[in-house]
Amino acid sequence: MITDFFNNIPDKIYNRTEENMQDEQPSNTPVTPHKYSAFLSKWERDSYGFLKNVDYFFKDDGQIDWRKMLPVKYLVVHKEKFKSETYFKTLVIEDLDDSQVLITLPGYKYLISLLGVDSIYTHISQSSEIFASCICNIEVSKNPYNNFTSATFCGVADAHINNVKGRCNNFLTTIAENRSFCRAARSALGISTIMSEEELSDNSTVAEAAANNTSTQSRTWLNDLLSKQGLSFDQFQNLMLAANIEGADAWKQISDVSEDRIFECMEIIKKKIAKDKKEKKSQKDKIAS
Image (cartoon, rainbow, N blue to C red; front, side):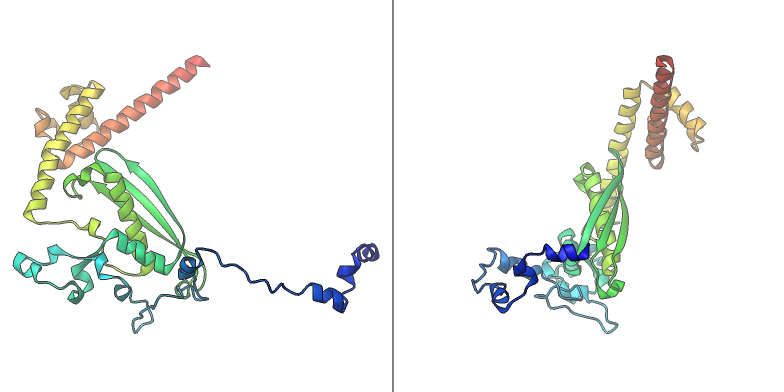
């Protein structure tokens, strides 16, 4: 019964006398601040989701001017926009427009921290010694630009030995992950300036490096794969013919395989290997049952 409930309440709570209410007053004992409060306060946000201790710059259309928010140390010159090396050395990065600069990975991390995020999730969808791809989802904190509701932005990126520079082909998964993060961040921030790691150069030095990578490493990998699987050249050729690879009937040796077909051929072999393993396992399961 309700009356029984109230009868069981202690008098000090139910009978709120003046004396009891005085006992309930907050203590005047000073609260000792947390030893890191001075640092943690720098990340406090207002009701609009903006950091309280940061001055935000805005464009005439009301969008945040992220270029003005970004320290110069996070910008690099987009060299491919300038043909003259002499002219390039005289550039002042602050005077360049968005299409003439690149933003580094730390720069995008800095900007996304200013925007505010609730979570960042990355998933490596594919990874091998020649190719990697990754998906990144960034869940942005509530702010006026998404009507104070949660919003998720997705970025998809890949990396293979023909679109990375120098020794970066040893870190394809990491590069793909970084690229996917920056593409998701670009969508969340509403900017188009690419990340420095995404730059694809057409100059002779990089083109020559890419050609060397393709002609040496990729053919070595193909030969190693065939050797590991015990496939002769004739077996390899027949497999490619069955897959309708154009020009495979004219091959006499591995060096006849065009550079743009090597990676495709390797993927076909790997799929064949995976299929054979699956069939063998299925047969063993049937025998065991």
